[in-house]
Length: 260
Image (cartoon, rainbow, N blue to C red; front, side, top):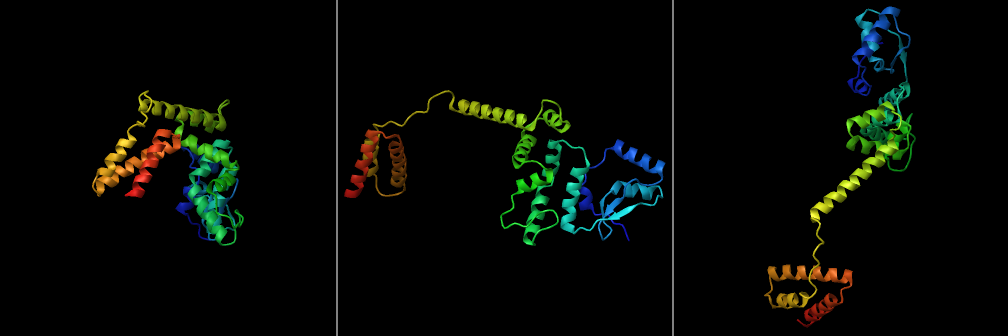
């Protein structure tokens, strides 16, 4: 069997740090082989163990391969799930990792659904919910996925690092709640600043009859239509606020239009 590397598959894997790679190389050289097999599909494409494959070739050590029977679509999902399952990840890390591939997860889920289901995702007549599919892969609730997405977009790096490390006292729910409260306070402050602390001026109720008369005296054309539209908006506000004087002007307008 000819062993091949698929860049798309390898891109789905969490890369090793330089220190991890050095330790892996030392271990393989000292043992003169592998303690676990490199996983490949039926075509000989590596699914997991790309670094071990290269290191074995580098040091002329015979690799140990194990074939996993998966299709191309299921292979990608298998790689993602396998990575999540084999690492000691926090709930936050698992969700962030799954979110990184949410487009792939959603596309493969849709494809499996059209084709009658796959090895990892059940067939369903309902539309694919990407958040739910990501939640299944990460083994968390769909609400958690939404909260982690929000945290990734709005939290500072220090906070995200604490969540990744599972620091005591730092939780997904607590962080999400804090960020939402800050967002609400910022929005409220911006709204207050925009209004400059002044109460919006209510359109004068006494000007409607005069405005009505002025509009009716205009010659037919664009200016009259524009003025009529502006007047109608003011009357609409009157209807909402139940302003008797402006409602009276509205009735006068209707009567004038009927009589014209």
